[in-house]
Every structure is written in structure tokens, then in C-alpha cells.
Image (cartoon, rainbow, N blue to C red; front, side, top):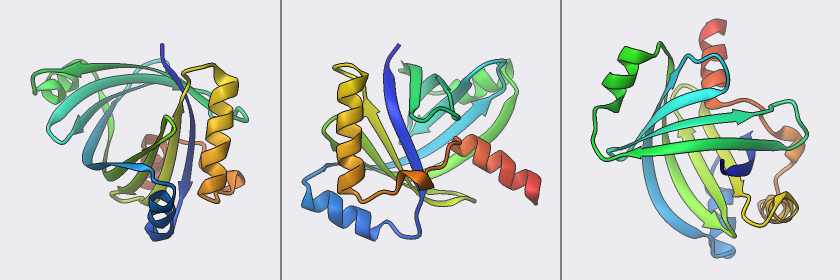
Length: 170
């Protein structure tokens, strides 16, 4: 099961982040229109991601209370569309998260510049574990410093949880 180290923060603007990413020559991978359909399961999180017409089923587990947000995940890509109807017939849909994501890559870290419908603007980092967790932590710390991120401001919840909480408060 692949693992990555994650961080999410709310931001008021993406402009400064994009300027820094350009300065450090982070690779721009494009704009992704994403719809994540979260399903109710007993343990972990299960979502169908519809991204620019492609579909993937993603299961992941993450301890939100731990100092570091290590996430173990499995992903299945589908050749055909229709997954949303199929899985919605099998599982109860909890919430749908819609976002526009600009994806950058720097030293095996996925940098997400997100605008999430009904929630706002965010930055997410996902550093892939490829040579052990110590190496991943080192690379993660480097990009956190380059982007001048205060880790104490991180949000220890998925967009799913944030959206569910925002609907409860209304």
C-alpha cells in the first residue's frame, strides 16, 4: 500500500504560492477539475474521483491526530465511465466535494493549489514515500520551508469532513 506525508492549510490567495513554485521550478502539471464522491464505509475513507473525465476509486486511512499526517492509500483507475452510478447503487453517498486543482510536482511532492466549492482556497502537499519515511520527512520539510508554511496552521481533516461540518453548522 503506498504511503505519503500530507499537509493541508487554508489560504486567502494562491498568488504568492504560485510565484514561489515558479521560482523553485516546480513542474506545472495542469488544471484538474475534480469531483470526489465519498461513500459511507465502516473504516477509512472511500471516494470515487472523477477528474477531467477519468475515474478512480481511492481508499485511504490517515490518523488525523498524529504529529505527522501519514496516509496509506490504494487506488484503482477505471477505463470506462459510469463508476459514480455503479458505486452510488452499492454504497450510501455521504458528500460530494467539487474542486478546481492546479497540480505542481517538486521532488516527489504533489503540490495542490485548490479552490473547493463551498469551502474556499487551500494548499495541500503530498510527499510520496519512496526511500523510507525519514527521506520523505526530509523532502517534505524542504518544500514546507520553501513555501514558507507555518505547519501549526494545518487542517487535520479531509475536505469531506470540512464540508460535512460546514453543512451541519448551517
